[in-house]
Length: 314
Picture 1 (cartoon, rainbow, N blue to C red):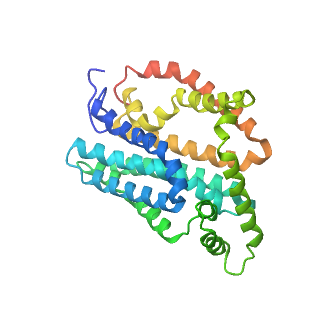
Picture 2 (cartoon, helix red, strand yellow):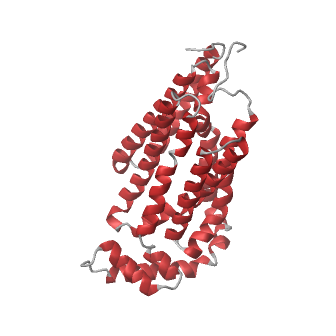
Picture 3 (cartoon, one colour):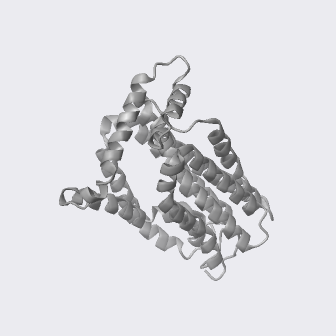
């Protein structure tokens, strides 16, 4: 591709671009290793607040960066924020939602994640038209959802389960009453929470010892194998580097970003569809159908990439 031009989405084998992109995920991985213990110790609400602040500061640093080092530092702060919030937020939803709505809350969390990815790709598509400083707008707008997380964390109470786990039963009662409404009868639910926390405490010490037993071996294999093979399909690479990948096979810069928008739209559509049919079809059917679709797409796209690799623009 000797006639290819370099721009914000066309940096072939650029180590700085790779460092900028991967720094978020490295930081998120590191923070996720300690996020579980921190969330257990200080509570879900506090961890969401810290994660939101880290994300907010990282967004501001990225928007005002004057060199690649500032960009990577800001990106790492974003990663730390992601690691903490992705640990605390699902727990918060699971522990505060009424039992009959728990599945709906979890599904909504996943759908809003996909909506966020779509919003980010649309932002990149439109800011790509702004010459010179469009990238600052794109990176700086991440402060908007970060500010929403900070504000939300300041306004909500910690979960009753977390408060009971840390010995604050009175605070847990107040939190549960606030979550369910002033006139709601929460005594039975509160007793259930206390009982569940006590059971978790009793079983906590021997949990890893039981996992080492042979009876759980096949579960452990699947827990490791499913996400590992999922990542090895390249779906994460497509999600992160899709503009660069589209550019390298010949798309123009603007159409490369548009390709990312289309990917996000397909992701959103499939997420909405699966959430609607999940209870009727079951998780296993969706898992097998999704795997089959990925296999077909992987096989069919190989000759197309081979044909497009010698083209410079579309």
